[in-house]
Structures are given as structure tokens and as C-alpha cells.
Amino acid sequence: MAVNLSKKEQRVRDILVKVAKGHVPTHRVGFISYKELWRKLSRKTWGRARKDDIVRWVTHISALDLSQGKPPLNELVVRKGSTKPGETWDSIKSYLEHEFNVSVPYRSHSDAQEACWRYWGRQDRESGDDKEVEEGYKQDRTVSFRSRNASIITERKQRDDYTCQACMFRLEVDGTFIIDCHHKKPLGLADAVTVTELDDLVCLCPTCHRIAHTQRYPLDIDEIRKLRGI
Image (cartoon, rainbow, N blue to C red):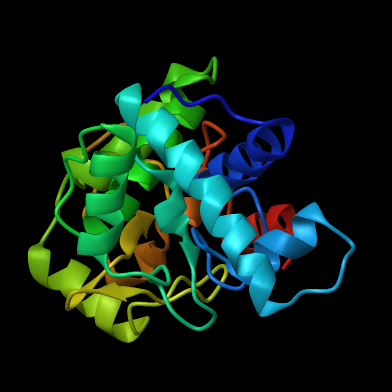
């Protein structure tokens, strides 16, 4: 079934892409509630009936994106106080596959949500001109510190209570905390082997971590907060 987005749906999609990138201030970073989304779209009073409109829009959007090999943005629209949409994963997956004849290659809400953050977060980083910025982020996330001990990473996360020290966002998905351990001093600029101490590290959510690395020398906590209007 062919899917063409209306102007309203195109506007909704633009908002959801920004949510995936962490560029929209919401109650939970990386998510937006039905009510929050409605208030960004209309001045009309929120009511439960509005949710049906939102579900229809985001379903069309996700069907189109899935047909193009992109993750379903509807998964970022969640119930107030929750990190899950209003319907079960199986029902959403079944509806998209049978109504729109698209493949849904994800196993759960959290699987699809992670795919959204990775896909649009990667696009955001790849659009930048400074390759060293991306390298700094990769170093913190995957290359690891020059002298890194797994225990010190665990201790830092425990000390920070698995909470982003910039925006204070704390997210646990299926028993796993979604939190990064960021090195305050850029290792790529060090002239020699660096021994990492506990105070050299700080916990950041994936969004704030990417923001920290938008410059060659990472932004500090206060600078991240200022950019995010916290």
C-alpha cells in the first residue's frame, strides 16, 4: 500500500526526527508524550480524542519510513510517565505489516526505539564537517580510554546513579541502564599514555554525550546545560 504524507504528517515527522536527535525539549529525552506532541502542533485543547489523530499520523509516518528501510518513529511517542507507546509491540507490528505491507525487523518497543536514536543520531553526526568531533565521540563510546579499567567505569556509573549529570535523565530499558561514560579530557589531544582516574569521568545520556562532542574539545557540563536550556 502506497503511503503519502499530508502536510500535517510531514510536520509531525520533522518533530519526531528532532526528538530522536535530542533536539526537542521534552519530559524524557528521546521520547515525546502524546500530549506534548499535540501541544507542539496545535493551540486547540488537548483531549483523549486527540490521541487517535496522533496515532493515525505517526502510523502513516512509520509505514513510509519502514518502506524506505528506516526505523519507525511512532515508537518515540509514548504514554505520559512511560517509555512505551499506548499499544503492545505485537499489535503495532502486526498492524503495520498487514495494513501497509511493510517489513518490521524489530523485536520490541525498546529495540525499535534504540534503532531510531542510532539512525537519526548518526545522521546528525555525519552531517557535520569536523571529522575529529565524531572521532572523539567514537573514542569515548567504543575505542575506550588509553588506560581503561572496566571497574572504574562501573564505579563512575554507580556514583552517578546511572543518571546524566547534565540533564539528569535516567533511563532503564529491560534491566539495562542507557548511559554513557564520558571522558572530560579529550584523549585524542594527549601526547602520552593517560591513566584514567575516577574524577576524569562523568555519566552522560547519549544525547548530552553527542552534544559534548560537537566541538573538538568537548563541552563541559555547564555548557551542555546552557545549550539545552536547562
